[in-house]
Image 1 (tube, rainbow, N blue to C red):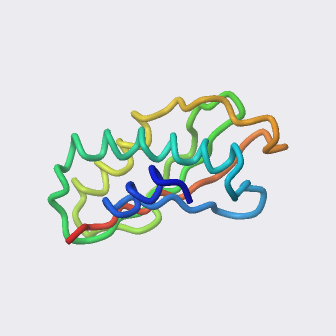
Image 2: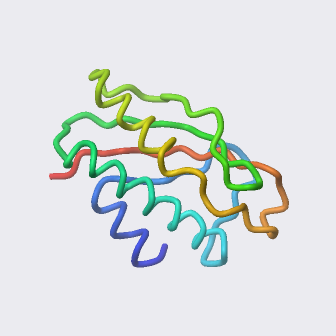
Length: 118
């Protein structure tokens, strides 16, 4: 995990692969995920100012061209406006850069876990 990715996790956004086929490690896969995480985190913080107490998770699919599809709430915070803000952060952050060719797939599904910070 790179320094930038550790910083975002410490701030309350963790990216997790959903299902097989997601590259990991310190190669371009980790770099790609860190860049995506940064974009989502920036938009999230503009909406909520880190003022929430319950985690919320959103799963989404990134297509080969970087476009975002199938944004779905996977864990509700119990606050509809906060849930909507999480979905909106992912939707607004897209499109991302095209998927790296070494991923060997035309799409990946990722989960963004927004967590309250102390």
